[in-house]
Image 1 (cartoon, rainbow, N blue to C red):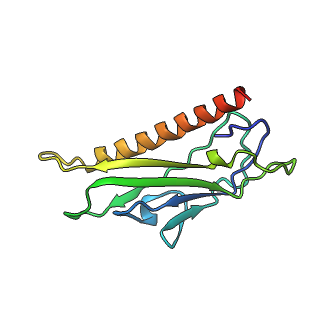
Image 2 (image 1 turned 135 degrees about the vertical axis):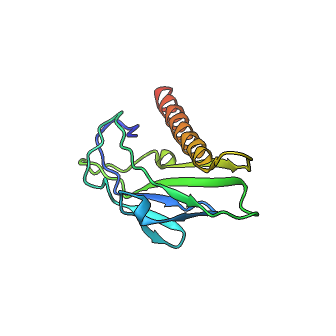
Length: 142
């Protein structure tokens, strides 16, 4: 989401691969380059994002099944190489990343894997939205 006052672009999106997950290109329509535990895409680098607008990029990760692969997992997403036509420096780089915590648990009965991942994704979206609202409110009070 562009929380600023002028249009801009997000040069690249960086997903820090959460522990216990793996990336498979065949699960994703967007190309992500995997480097040193980071997934990087420039899928929206040429798209203008006006103030108040947002862009979505979907990424699907696979959970690595394992008896020690449960509990709290961290998910971090970072916007990098952001630019704007005026060439202004981003004065609020704090809102260029978001960290979310996911919790994986075991359930008996039906397969809960998809529901667990969906809960994590919804949590990430909520954390990003709350973070952006806080950032916006801080700007209003300055």
